Length: 231
Image (cartoon, rainbow, N blue to C red; front, side):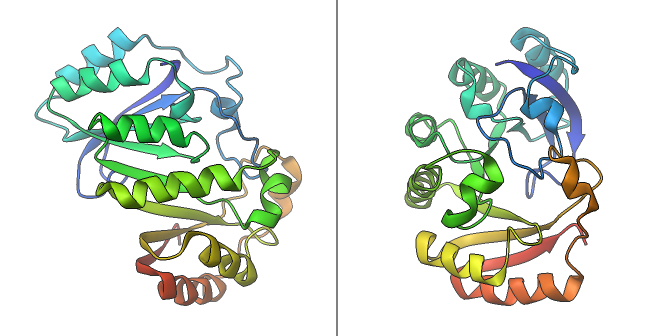
């Protein structure tokens, strides 16, 4: 699984559950605002754990946690993700995955095998700004396909956008609405400039709360639930 980090207990990462968080290394995007570039770039500066070590640790947490959140990095890049999740399932745990949505076939395969209980998918910005922000061409169609798969799966899910000045504006949310249509839950996240992959963004001031609330009002027009995190 290329596991590079493990957080033994979280009360906030998996809605409604107490979970452990497993962090994989490596990502297929290079988002300028990335707050965990060491993980995303898999630089080797982090620790490294075998599947067996992590499973042994999590088994000892049975009765203390309800689930496991797979995060990163980008966990859908991991070649052994399916047997790893099956091993977690055998421990009676629910599984959440955090994904950038660019591997729709992986998400579909995991869903078809009943290996996911909750999916958090990032929408970085509108289609026109995606390459500039993430460094990847033609990413949005893959993301859109993942969201379509998730919405039709019946599995609980959320959409998330980190609100970075310039890269995420009200006009960008209008474009996102046109692309993904109505969703169940949409969370807006305050931009944090303390650690970023692109050092120039550390001089970028986060949006004031009234602007985030303006975004929230609009996003509520195409979501059942919209909340702002990190304020």
